[in-house]
Amino acid sequence: MSNITEIASYAQSTAQKLGIKKFDIYGSTVDETSVQVDQGEPQQMKASNRSGVTVRVWNGDHLVGVTSTTDVDPIGLELALKTAQEASAFGVKDNVPDFSPEATATIAPTHGGASDRIPQADVSKLLETLVDAEKQLLAAHPAIAGVPYNGLAQRAIDRFYLNSDGAMRHEAHSYASLYLYTKTEEEGRKPRSAGAFRVGTGLEKLDIDGCLKEAAEKTISHLNYEKVKTGKYRVVFSPEAFLSLLGAFSNLYNAQSILDKQSLSTPDSLNCAIASPLLSVCDDALHPDNVGAETFDGEGTPTRRVPLITNGILTSFLHSAGTAKRMNTEPTGNASMGAKVTVSPNFFHVFPGEAATEDYSLDTADNVILIDDLSALHAGVQALQGSFSLPFDGWLIKDGKRISIESATVAGDIREVLNSIIYVEKELEFTGSGVAPRVWVNELSVTGE
Image (cartoon, rainbow, N blue to C red; front, side, top):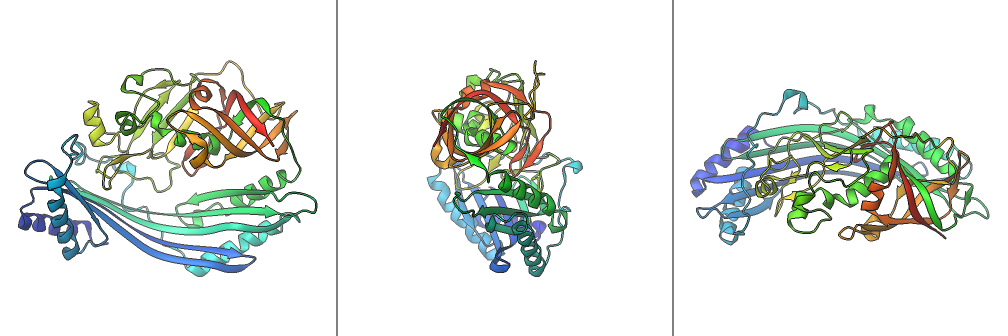
């Protein structure tokens, strides 16, 4: 990608030539290399360079036109500005988007910047690493017959935002990711699967041993499975499972969803109790564990820590510049630029709120279900009703011992789940979408096979 200063310079000169007084540009480029293997042999190798730029232009009637392009050279950018200028005649007249009031605000140096990039490893090194990881996993137990889903990838990302008021932001970072998902074969037994995922700033920073150990232990723990009786159970959500639910029902705290009346919340829900006082949740793009944290959003607004739920109270919504203006508050750094501006969470941080009156432990639990992973969220979640019915992988805890569950679904209402929390453990675990502890819920419906 061209130097951000050069892009800003010829964007400004081109805009003047076209008679454009107000515009902004958001762009990114991603260099990615990924590999997959099968029984020690390379199965797939990919390398790509993807770039995209979104241009917005406001006309004299304060209407905005939007266009996208993959070209950031002078010719491509001039065409994008001209197309957006022409499209502005057909721009929406209600709630017209505008620059973020914080697009020129200073980003603290401690938040990171353009220096967090680690040189990418050779493809041969990626293949060698993944082949070795597969080999170790296959040797972990005789029942592990294959690792059908696996992948090792590395990405280098550049992002920038600029506007005609002088805003100019740029950052670059890199990260690598590994996933391993096994499959077992035992005579007279159903195939069982389990997996693990790790992410780091680069290949050398990747916890490969931890990923191998977790995938092997989970797989082995699922070999001796049993059916579970249908009924009501005390349920413990793993960090990943709980964050999956939080993400599936993000309309609870998404200001755009609330304004569009596509949410379980209303503007009046702010400062109301929506969960047990034992629970606190923040959206924290700058959390130390967030590999490749972004310091600004698609509108140039600095990202930050946003307290969503504090001791069970809904304390904030996630905002773009437009939703913040409509709700008379400040943007939170959660906007994504596109044909329209959307709002989404960055990185969850779940932690205990008020102190619990009683501590719980899986080591002494009895008749408790531990849900490790939820499936089919695209089909089993009714986001506007608050209900869900989802297949899951997990264990029935009997006298502190884990018994793998053959097949089951868990069903409930997200509002009841949040209000039925009886314990939030203190130890946090990193997942791809945030950090969280295990969360205990008093009772949920579980349907066995």
